[in-house]
Length: 524
Ligand code: GDP
Image: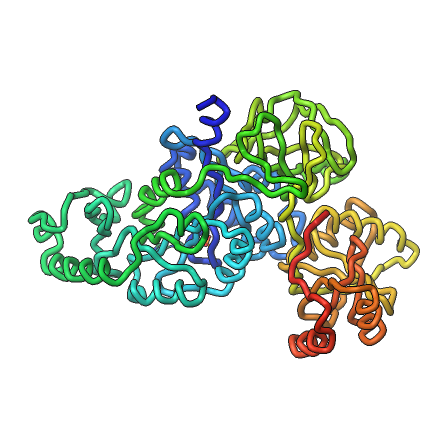
């Protein structure tokens, strides 16, 4: 194997997905700690616990330095390089959350053992499904009175449409939680919330008398359970996992460090190294000699006056080197990149080199756009970086009507950056903003004021979801004539249907069966 191939094979790029409060922040922190990337618990949480009122965007602005650093965390573990990408949740849930999932090769899904599969998990999983992203499941909070493990697996299978293959199995739960049995290593790890790494002892074999000594009567229950589980559950099948059809399942308690090491080991052992990526003209292999990558996220930097942006680039092929001249394919411009950034758990460093699977930040002044491809010269265009149907809408109204031009320009640019989406209904002069998370609106208002000198207020707009329309010119004209107030053009002049409710959407779809109503649109 060449050095390039070796470097790529040792990389793992993944994100953690979960419904708020399932334990994503806790697990992230513990993974970093087990990986030796942070010394103490608390550094990830510090960012989250600074609760912000949504109106207090300045406060958020101040925190951005931290959040830029933490949105990608690289650390070495067991001869591997782990790239852990943050998927913001809670208040700052936005399209970035979804788009980050287009930049990973696998994901870890955290399920709260008390609540089971929850709404946001389903949404995020649907995005993973677009690329059949392999998913490892971590069922968390076994130290609480949970639902029966078999019931949780059934729920994952029926609501998320993936087979479950338990790798570990819990011994009891809540007050009687004693640990997990590893079905493949034939090992029992005893749960000890007081032990530094969550466990004080690991023993081999279900018939080991030490098992009876430590957990007493529960040992016999475990033996019966495991016989049943082996008979009734799926065996782990790597190919099925890699194609997104099966998910290996681990049980644990993140806050108690328990089960975290097995999970991190699984990321290294089971999850894929950087995978090939589809581009318009061809598939790009990670171990190609030449560098290529795409922008999946743009983040405004600390100093808004300078329009500083960081473009997060997922390296898809080859190797990036400091000072390298790379081409921004959309503009055909060459850039010598000396100041790319690698994001570590707590720092950021200037990137000397990066390989397929890594994420590098490229500072720029607004010239780099979401979805842009960079290459060493080839006219490549990566696909699969979509806009997602917004679920929240607002009408932007100017406080000073003379500033219409600035407003349009600002909204257009912010839409290109992915801060929010812009829709212009055919039959009105309204400027409608769409977002998947409401904090996006506060971000836009704040940035319009500070970067474009435009003061706006938001008004409610009666729309519950949007669909991009694809069809013949005649059909698009017909639907525009009939539903002129619902049909709009987006920032890229594409036709969009703004539906006030699901019934209205269903009726429009029924009336125009030859038009496709799409939930996502590829950014070109
Ligand atoms: P996030 O919203 O998914 O990032 O969730 P957090 O990591 O913030 O966790 C939500 C709450 O669950 C916090 O109060 C955590 O301390 C708690 N928590 C996380 N893991 C566990 C666990 O294993 N057991 C219990 N009992 N609580 C947990």
